[in-house]
Image (tube, rainbow, N blue to C red):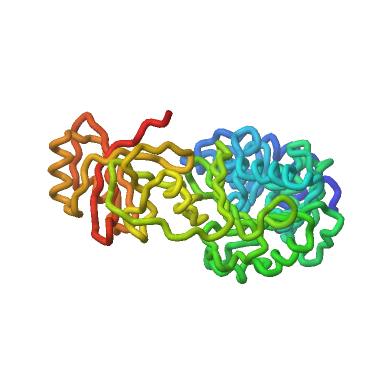
Length: 411
């Protein structure tokens, strides 16, 4: 490890490379500059940079402005108190786990097997290591990129978690994980051309990560939510997690406390979990009833729509569409419900006439199985009036259909 940088960071800026620039940001001068930029307006960045360069080295100003932008982006994932103290890389912000999801996963680790130590492989900027440490777990955080590892180390320090998080710059395939109660791995799923969809093209490949997981008493592998179910294997419990209705990730769990071959959908912030021991039989299909239900994305990804159909005593409106219908109202954390007032074949002019007649000025457009873009439809409707409605562009028994309705009030 290098010695601590000089107080003003000036000497570091004479060095080339991102590590030197990052070290300069951690000096008192760099810290003060970042504090000054906390609430800066990106639209005025050129003027801000010009002003700051009168009193600060230009490379330090550029590094601080870049970091300030990343911190502003990170607020959505980490919240303002943490995001404005932490450090980020562009890839780190993009790929880091949302704090609420990382916290849930850390707590599940502790519940499953009383986990007290975790080897966090491919740790990135340390978001998961932070959540684990805050749950009382000791963490070995490993990343092969020197800058990323340095950022993870800095984040543990600024959040006061350095006693629980050891950061190591290494190739995860060379790390001995046997001293740890559990393994968590988050293989890189982005390359030079964008997202990687083949699990064997992850870095490291999913097969290697699975092998490392099976050697541990307890393990979790973070994977893309769209992973093919056939790639999961029979020895893992597969969990899809949504937060605020948006699917954030899928996790394969191994070892103590899990049910191999099962599927789970977990909804945050409530923590509601829907499970099934394995693939479910195809649900019935039938006509649209008085009520329509839109399952949460995690339920759909986990192929648990059939469980919702069985629970509400309903049916699908089409065998290829994840909309559930019933003749009686049904309330569940796993769906958003609507009362359907109109069903008509897909026809723009008829919909426009109906909305004008109902004096609908606010239209929510939802679609499954339709190529129509919501903004295009709203523009063509020329909405006016005091009322609101929801239209579903979908298929019913294979036929393009429009369903008009209102959201059901939650109890």
